[in-house]
Length: 150
Image (cartoon, rainbow, N blue to C red; front, side, top):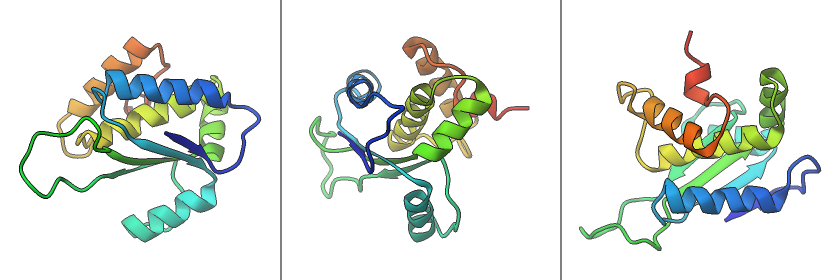
C-alpha cells in the first residue's frame, strides 16, 4: 500500500500504486510492504527518532521484526515500511534529468531491497548488483547506488 501525506500534483498516484504492486509481485515475491510518501519534516523526524540522525533524507526503510517462531516467511506478513521524501525526490529528479515519478520508483526499489535484508554499506556490492539488475528489468534510470559511485 502507498500512502501520500499530501496529494502531489506531479505524481500519478495510481501509477505509483501499480508500481508498488509490481515490486511486491516481482521483487518481494508476493510479500507486502507499505510506503509513505511525505515531506522533509516527516523524513527528518523519522530519521531522528529511529536512527538518531537529525536531518531529512530521501528514503528510509523500516524492516518488520522477524516472526517470533521459526517458520517460513508468510506471503501475507509485511516486510516493513518505506518512507520517501517527495521534495528530495523532486530535487534529485531535476538534477538527474528525469521525472519525479521515476525518482520515486528508484527510491521505492532501493527501500524495498533494504526491507529484503540487503545493506549496501556491508554487503560487498550485493545490493548494488541487485539494484542494477532490477533497475534494468523495470526500465528505470540509474539507481541510488550506481549514481553514487565515483
